[in-house]
Image (tube, rainbow, N blue to C red):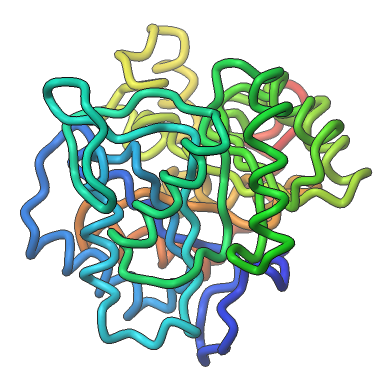
Length: 319
């Protein structure tokens, strides 16, 4: 599939990716500090490989990811890129006070109020140095009832006013996302880590329901925090050390892929695109080399036999 029209840049670029976007949490110092020049190189590498969809959030580095993305895209024709960011969390400083509009802090706290949503968006626009957002997500709300009652109407108003082109919700767990698909007028949802070669929990109900209602799905967390990128060097699942059973399954998946000459990480990046309703994949990258690698996955030939063998290992025919 491909990014739906409302999520594509207003001006098309020859050779641009239809299905892959850059996740910008890593350049916001996720788990590891990233130097400013390295962050610039990561974004430049994405542009050079045809990536035109960039996903960020105030929560990533307490504003650092947005600021770095905004700086790296300075001078790039705004109409040739699409930017997704998120609301629902407020950036704070070390004392717990809200940072000035557009500032960078040390942490974030939840804020689903109308004022909180509007101030968050104002801060994002300032950090990103742009006058509009293409896709505005509600970011992993803890209280779904409050989010539906308070935050989602604000997002709908912003879309109606043309401040944002599309709205959605990004979460890890499929069950609460189901409520937004059914009860809110969202364009897309992002599901992180639950439509992967190791974790299929988003596939049973969320994807079919999204397909029925015309809601697009963007898959993130395709490596499950590292284990599907390299089960030996990065045996982490959901940001912690993976249990032995998951490590063993990942190693078996890697062996099957190796036998077919396809890196496991490339199969993992492509897998969600085989699923109904999944329109695109966002992959986080910290370095230009990581960008080059995941961008290559979009075009690598993956034989049907490999998918069948992976499905047999899954024991469910899902792959």
